Length: 206
Length: 206
DNA sequence: CTCGCCGTGGATGTATGCAATCTTGGCGAG
DNA sequence: CTCGCCAAGATTGCATACATCCACGGCGAG
Image (tube, rainbow over all chains, first blue to last red):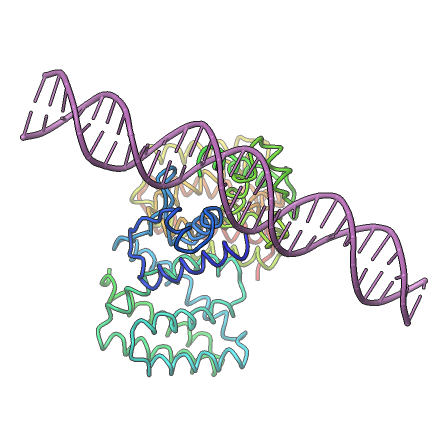
């Protein structure tokens, strides 16, 4: 499961997250095999992995499709993130290395300066990933994987109002400050606000 | 990805959860293919899926092994369950059908009468699954899948003290009562106690 | 005697052929 | 005209053959 399969999975992942392949699109094995210049076997590997990540959906004998999330599912995803990510941040803060703190700060400032909202998606993903990684819990990381890197975030950033986006970016900066102060409770509170703000622009409060 | 692959995945899952295949055991593709009378292709499919569920671990060019969880990971798993399952129960209670309530009650009483602890594992899994399913959130179910059906539970049931086991079984009964009363808050509280009790026998309180 | 190199055996990774299943367009009955 | 059936095409699912990589043991140099 290496070179070809891994590479195919990575490319498909990027294309799906970037929106090049739209939600609900059919993913034919032969088409993908031809386009990525590999055989169908690694393609099947890649699709199985992406299915496990929740990016695509495989129906027996009917092929794979890019998942499309309903509004209801989006709300549920935020409900999950609200229960896990603040905890992750709190666990991460005491464990953050100086390099990770610098990375977080760089990402936070870079996001403020970035004009393109597409670029924000990737920066945002890396920002949140650092906290999750630093929390040092593989079960936690596994549970969050499916709900954080999903196209949800992409769609979310395009739905932000200017004020909502500003708040979101400011939350990142504040979380870095809380992390530098070693105050996990502070960071957790900001993360909660961060997610509530995102949820509000996404699906409206409950 | 059908008959053969699905069936192979199911059998491997069962054997791993039942402890027939010990933790850390190597899973050779040819060996499994021969034993399950299918080709290597569906075996690879199955292993990829089980890896996604967190039951096995695949190292490139070095095959698959059954995962073995450290005490630290077990603690993290309970931390996750404590944050998700009480919420799941609360969401599930208003949505439970009469049939599901009957099933829950049947499982709870059956577990009290069952003598064999191995049998308890499966009954317990079904009990918790009903709540998770009734919660009606696929993201939530996905997040919980990896931490609930894992060999953790199996090991846990064998570690219970007689008193701890009695408490655990009683919690199930009480949860059914709370569910029948339509009181989600009550059920959530019992679930929290249920998990704390399980965690205490597993790894000790923090 | 110890360490490092290399060859061999076995396992995984990939490609391709064949069988089974599903989709679809058209045709006929009502 | 609508609905249901059927056959052809296409696609997925499985099996097998070949290529590639890794683990392990023997051999030789120091």
